[in-house]
Image (tube, rainbow, N blue to C red; front, side, top):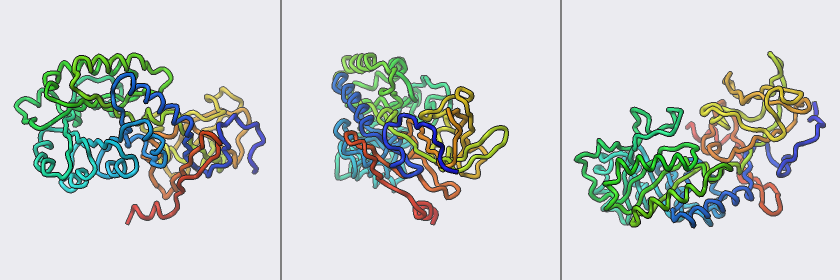
Length: 390
């Protein structure tokens, strides 16, 4: 069958110029987010870092580095990537470091946040002997939750992330220069305001001799309904109460929110309680948050089930029975060879992909903000699967 002759939706670039499947980041949209983050930095006085766990497409870092002060990493490899491809400040946090990992981290980190006083005491001598100055802090747990889903709530009962105020009694914190809390996930600034109140109530007494506080990530700053004015007011208020402290934010998702797409192709259509369109992409391998969060990504030109004339269940090419993205409706029947474009696929996609079933990773592309031409940054073949297994 040939691709359908239905009128194509108004795509923001030439969808046929992309490999399939492919992640495509639009530089114009990325710059729009970065301009907003720059505004927040200028108006609030906070310093914003890119959290590499959310967006690590380092081909874009010359652009991102024009706006943000550095990166924040979850371990040795992210720290190295940030230092080598982004520059600026490199912040690192991990629930626990090994001695071997710490040797690597100390080559790149400017700030290290430890998860517990025990980890700090284990590595404080190594840090003191390091050839470069590293500012160290402690991640704390304010025991205040804004999240509704336990898997994304670092303050849930029994959490291993961060140190509670009760567990600091008698702890040796000498030499620590900062405190770090990370409690939010896709939240607006009112959630930060309430969290900050809980943080200061429990840990305000430790701030007098500190140099910085890291408010972590989860701030959905570039979402259309995000209350920027409140964010600026909250940060300014904190800095007025503690004028000696530098404030950091480390969003990952907010940098790349609504800047990218996943372009894919219909491979086959099979019937079972309605039509199933099999795509050359995969929920479990290429967009795992669809199953983990879970959520339903949007497709340009598609609607809710039953909203338009023709409804299909869209699934991937792995053997997982649950590799199903969801049900979508279209104005005209789908045909083999038709291309689809999922939206908001720049963050927590490229960094979380797998080669399960030997499914090849999507290519990575960028759209030039002026010419609108699509450039393929990276493609993946057999070697990407083979080389991670032996």
